[in-house]
Length: 221
Image (tube, rainbow, N blue to C red):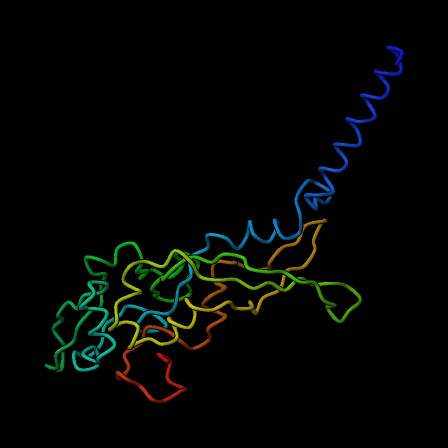
């Protein structure tokens, strides 16, 4: 083969190889797939649920904070009860982070996107995505996720018995209520993705409940 033909042939092979590599990766404009765009917003976001009450300060009667589910959290060292002096003479306590809860208890609103005091029990990881009509001539992207990297305390039998909702969330794959929409060529989840898990589980959380609790409507089940 003549030298000039060799140069042309080599250049053609290089161009074809580059094109095949891009197609195999499923890359879109900008070099990032729609799935990768969502993964960037979902992966690693902490999964949290309301802790004790929807707002602070977490100060309640000593009797209410002696429920079996609260006892399980105290025994695991996640929270502690500080005695308070009540004006009416009735014993009251304040819920604070326990020695083993510093990494996962969120008492200040806004931490990790929590709209209430919260206990975080893992991180979200994107599982699947799918597009569908948004009903207005456009598209939206639905996604599902799993909760991974659960801390050791989530395997405590007493806590698993007290909070079945947490066990279901850790064991399954869940479709998010929120959908992503395309804006300026990028798929984006509106709002703060960190609040996603709390929105998805509704009224469930780490509340003072009896154990076991047979009521399917209970916020702990």
